[in-house]
Image (cartoon, rainbow, N blue to C red):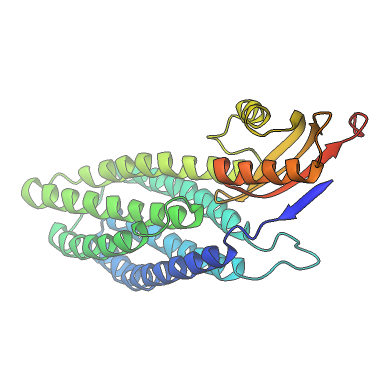
Length: 301
């Protein structure tokens, strides 16, 4: 059996996580602080759009705290119990964040229906001031998070939460302007529903992607059969490949196990295994691979 544990740039991963952690902490402070302002403004103005965005920001604050904790925990080294380390905690955080976004969508829709059935007074001027301030805060937070690694699902989950806030602020501004100039208050719950639909689309995508990784699915972009054919054709000495399993601790940290036969007459099986590992790393970014060389047939058949 050939086995090699590539470091695959763990120092770079930790450095990237450190930068991502700082981005999340900035967004956390901004979001948490303004959430209080928006709750007060929503209560005073009577705006569902503001209260919905405030509720979203409350969950965002918790989500960003969870994301920050995930980056901190993921830096811990592997141990006897968690031999691959804590990298996947980020994916778990992304999954929880996605589910919390879906819960927010449900709450907004419920409140919107209640407002349609029992409309109330909305103070457009107060709503406009608070929503405009929220837009500025959310733009800063989103810019900070969007400058991070968008392939990192933890950063992506945090950015999606803030993007939802950004949409909520825009909707609240539009609703406030309509109410100020026309007095038509149903625009408030209507735009809240529109924002909820957009949040749902992003949240569902995040839940699906993180769940796929937690279920140890192969990367969505990878055709496993085509990869096997490329290895056989591209690495001298490789005969046949089977029992292939590919998954990721995160989208960036890919793992592989497989069985491989070596063509008769090859002088060194170790060289073939080493070349195969290098091919996997260079062509597919698979930094940790375990390859078993079959002798006299596969032992697992």
